[in-house]
Length: 458
Image (cartoon, rainbow, N blue to C red; front, top):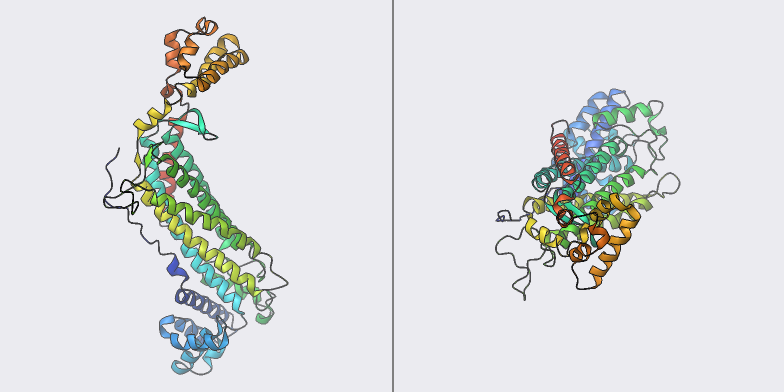
């Protein structure tokens, strides 16, 4: 066992704070500022007015109490914010300047683009967390690349594998999710400015240019068709989040199972003083794994909401905008929680190779049936070898008889395999195939991916 950690504190990844009311208001103001700059550059509004609008699109300059009062009266998410910006501009700059705020735009243009700004910030947090998780998994795969463990299929012993190989499979899947995120970025994080029905009529002939310039100020690509009914890019992102959550759930499930006393092969960090039960002092519960499983289930359960939000009627429907905002903000926040716990889990995971080796012997060598069949098959053919080994394996499984003794007592088998050869074939550590090489390769893959995710360009 490795040294036990002294703490298992789970840090807040900071994603939820990106979706507070105030944080969203500031993101919407950022979009209003970008819109004003774009329109000022094209002469649609006075250039000096555009500068003043952009300079005053800061929430700290506005009166939040007035915005809240406006919300209570109007029940509109954006108008009170615009009113307050107009008022401040009128008092500090001139009455005419505020009249150019939000020129030609409709609410969803601003709120959807602003929310995607926040989602992009959360996206970078998620990628950084995956990078940190990979730095925890890489040495685990390396360290246990050759430590044999029972490979289990359908819940039963199959053939030997190694624990490092198991970790390598986790790494490979996580890295594919990173590739999915990267591939989706230019489709998901887009600026939308189409006016009331996505036609850009309110911006006149340079409408598409206004959207392009606004998008450039936000470091986003513009939507090719700025339709208010399009939520497939949100749904795609939610789908990737759900797939990532499903992978984390699988890993947590495995940890949960292998931590059971009947297995005893893993143990998550259980710092001194941790209480597992109010009545059973012995309990060392998989708290991190349980929390991860619960949160992952919520993420995958949210995906249908995102898909349903794609079914928007005509040119806009406020109900689906509410649905997609809820789906994306809740999913990304939960995934942040999941990854924070995954990092703590694998920073202090306890691996017990000795127990893994003992568990390999639980079946009395039955786990080596394939190897024996193949070795014997070289002498008598695969099907005949299968019949011989099958008969003895089934007898050993239902009788209190040693599999090795049954094999050794088979005259046909003994004509082709000596007892020394049989004992060698029954050693699980000699039948792990490419597990070690795969584990070490994936450990390197994890390091390279983590380096990429933590590079300044990311």
